[in-house]
Length: 453
Image (cartoon, rainbow, N blue to C red; front, side, top):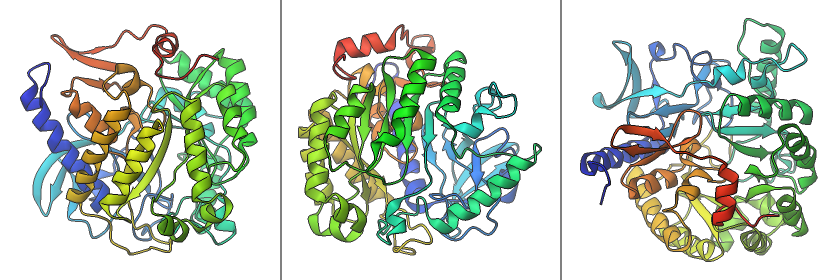
């Protein structure tokens, strides 16, 4: 693979890191007690009971678990707990090291908290910005409007999914209540009012963070949940367009997608999860009954026409179907301007697939490389703007996906992002911040982010 600056060793190093990330995603990790120092304080973390963190019931629900792992060349991976994993992270001479079956494979770091943002008090003098929104990697500005997935309420949850798992959320709420009552304890974001979120967004901008908004709210057909948040943020910050997405179920009424577009969001995320019609009905019973596979496809196609190529996204849970299904899905999505990314199936406890096996890391890699090749035929993956404007899994916050890691690799490793979400490129003098200027004006004029309203 061609590289721009002394590229062969860099490309080989990135290939190795992508392999390590694939192993972390498919096999989870064990962490020695001595490696937890600073998690939740210096480094970003959350209570271990949090959904999407443990394959087995955590030994202690309120233990603070690290959110992400950063490898030496900047590759970032979600940190999943698996007590039986062959991969261990431990501290040695003040350095975190990753071992596989006792053999060294890499050093690493935990992802740092955006402390300057999270610890800033809002104008009420008592609420920290980090209590209002979750801010991952200085880039993922998560607006959590609700903690309810209506499919759980109806016994129709997706079979692999533990997001909004009732038992876990109840316990998480107990832990958060204790932390909020004790100023010496660590807090965790459970959401805020539109006005609080807007003030937090202004704080992040003033601190020079270049971030993506992601509005999440379980599975609900009501997009109106988020209109007050978008309106408040736009009024407070003066932004005409919001760089980010609503990640929510596909609507039955396609006009709701037009509303999201007109409100100025740059993209939309509607996770289809599985491709085969029979598997869609079986794995995602709530989505199948309430929207249906044909309805989901119509929504993705409609959004693909509204937004620019790559600004409609859908994730697929890799490991529940054959490779054939993912490649068929990639061809269909790419042709419609939809970014498809594949994230590894995780056997989280408490789900209907509790204990089921994940894919091998080699197979996950094969699928991702082939999906990337297909996406590249349809989407402008080689442009700086595409890399910078990823609607939900940009390189800086692509913790559970390999897509942007492979995009970075395909460009010789000479493009990345710094800890505040700004694009950086490798030049003769090392890593330098890209001169974004008015990023929205540049990106809109180039046709990457969408049609100017």
